[in-house]
Figure (cartoon, protein in one colour):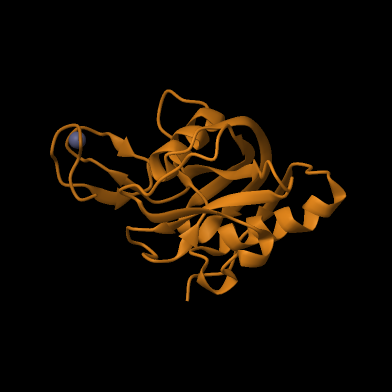
Length: 185
Ligand SMILES: [Zn+2]
């Protein structure tokens, strides 16, 4: 940001009185423009095949940058006025056309170098109903053996999927917190 969103004045970097780090400050109106990490909320959408009873995961192929063409779980920035679970369900609907229920907190990942925190829920698809969207070129239900491990969009998604498939045989999915330090290649 170069200009003040309140008055249009040119911003400078300085340490405000009583603060201990550089901020973008507007000398004209005195407003301090804080920048803080963003919360990304998402789901592991799950579906049980009626015939076999086997579980499938809904994943989507990104139709937008960054990481266009790579596979991911539905996730995006939380909006004002919604809970984390509402945001995760909304992102899932927007990116896959699928409605999820029974959201259960599963992982929180700090990604300090990109100023983000990911909060991922396990969730159940109400129906095997989904479709490509503006953000997803392809959306599909797959088994663990079909996960495209070499084409996963982000380290945090890869880690979340690894966590999930490690927990699944135990039938227990305790909430846990972790940190992603790996950068995109
Ligand atoms: Zn200003």
